[in-house]
Image (cartoon, rainbow, N blue to C red; front, top):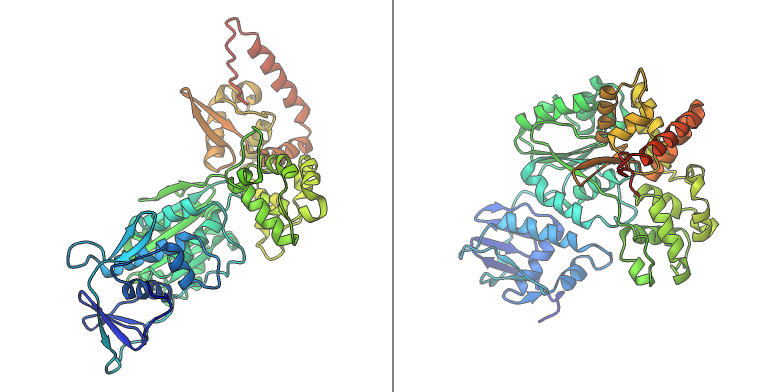
Length: 492
């Protein structure tokens, strides 16, 4: 195969109904120019120049991104966009085939002509957007990012849901970046954290999208709107999303929230924590680096401390840090920022004091993302007083618990069983408790970081000792059941 950079820029390439003017970086379908981004055009140019041959993924990435380190998903997204734009070839197959384990191949016959008279067409503008520049790579999210990228243009409305610090905004922005070339009228980030009143939402949306006549201007636009941080405006967001999807048939919406919007047609994707090493021993650095939580810890530590290397003797500490921080990307990033001062072993020793330890965050981030406490404050302060009380008292459970156990320990004249069940379920829907299903039993569990946060609240309320005693008495009663069955159903 010739060098991938051996391109004759004076040539015109013809295939199917298309004419590809290389010098002008233009593809015509008859007289109609196809709108394609620069990266997609570069990929297509390489494939068409080597029609019939297989071009490896590595070679394509090296050609299109010669000075950058990018994930393979970038290439897959652009290939998918090319397939959508070109449709099927004369034989009913896509023009570009994926050759498993090898790469991609352009399979249609290609004719090369010398360039003739320049073609005068409307200039194809770069995609419009207001996305912030990404300063660090996204770790451990390729699978879920790829899933959203594939589904969103079809489903039109998806919501990323998860607890504080799980990385919802990071994933949403990465999806938006990868879909820039797909949406003709742009990709727009609308951060709702900066407004408090539901009545402000439409005006804020119009300002961000630079709409002169309100959201009615979106009716004919082929665009993606990212609604970030919807949890405190759920009802208003639900109504606005319903209206937009009905009135703007080419609009897609990606929302982030700590609970679903429950709007019509919503596809909810709960964001998992990064993959944490199991309690069993890690036998090599390579094995540890197979877990995305460790990958993030190491990459961010290297960014702060030149020459940082994960050593064999560090594996236990690294695993414990990732486990105690629940695989939460924000918590791990904040911990990594302290490694140059404390080293991994020192960081591990300080985890019982995690909120003080992780209070120094990213100065350039919005306040709720600067440190772990701020991220949890954002959720906690939006709970009702009764929800806050229940969350505090549940913190005496240091393992997974059932609703029966919660009722047995914290119910009272105000928190009657029916009311308590409803509140626990609401807290789970808000991502403050995680839900586990097994053997036909539903259990609830705190993330370590969330439990530490609300346990501190319970202590300051003056009721910690009371509910610790109630918890202990409940466990003793459960152990004394005559048939040996522990009705409490706590699990490690």
